[in-house]
Image (cartoon, rainbow, N blue to C red; front, side, top):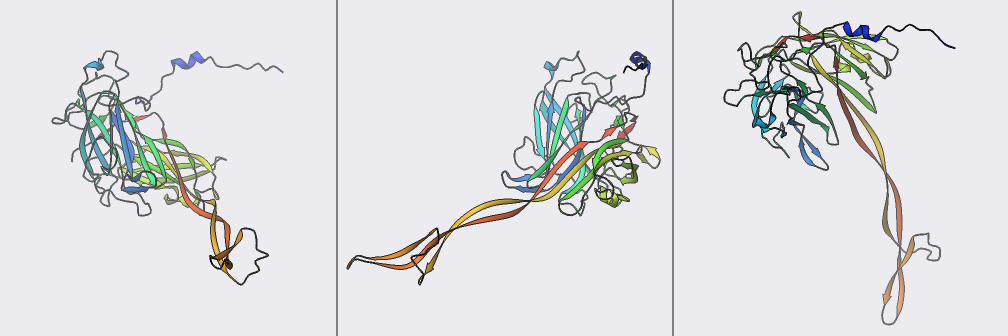
Length: 403
């Protein structure tokens, strides 16, 4: 059977213009945001003691500036900031430091200055820890390109890429790609980005591309007991004023299950926050028994005191389970006489004492080899993570690196 269906011409859509987020999270940037930082150490079986969080930053030639000669690039200087989630008074503690490398070079470092690395860095501040977590502290890392360490002026160089690895246990880890943010399109490579001279990072499409304030994502729901399935939302804002009191960032959350059933909740955090689904308002119902196995989360636009602000996020998943390891062991036992030596079970043999003179063999016992099947229960953890998506609607914001 043939159906006559009228399809609107695709060319008509080409004339429709919509507001879009100019930042490209798949291209190198002049700014990198690492969404989750935890301090501490992990004792592994194969690599010894490792830092909880490890970072890698590489520098490539900016891909969107065909007029720039990358052969003229010498040292590339970076300014970095550890940013804590807010304490009880709303202060987001921060510590800054400098890094440097060359074009096509790579920097590796970690929170503990431990193990293989190219650079030692100052320790993060004493970030507030979640009492229910093994991982210490909590915050994010932001890095941007500067002209040199002495002046520390931000410049455009859309050549940064990076990633981080977080060890959640001695046998598991998860990874995040750093979120790149490009400098304004009106700037040339190596231009100063601080157009208004306030020493801040303005994400306003002039100094740097705007960042969004609303997130979406598919999400697996939680399961308590054994095995345990735990899902976390990691959320942060770039609307931060370093080392002083910051306002609370809040956003409503709408969760949906496979059948489109809605469950409403919300988040409130200062600078950075980590939220297990079960800890959210009404979150005890967001589990595989009461709600669904997988679904969708959609946030409202984030605000601070009613003013729209930026919000970026990732989903983290941790699954704890137990599995059995089977093995076979052998051992010997020796049994004293009396025993019927003419009717020994398989695996057993007579143990004799031999006298040379006069020649004499005297049975003194029985030795048996025993095979034992063993079963050992092993606790294990599986982890993964992925970024939340956005609505492409930029929000002008300012990151203030100095008090």
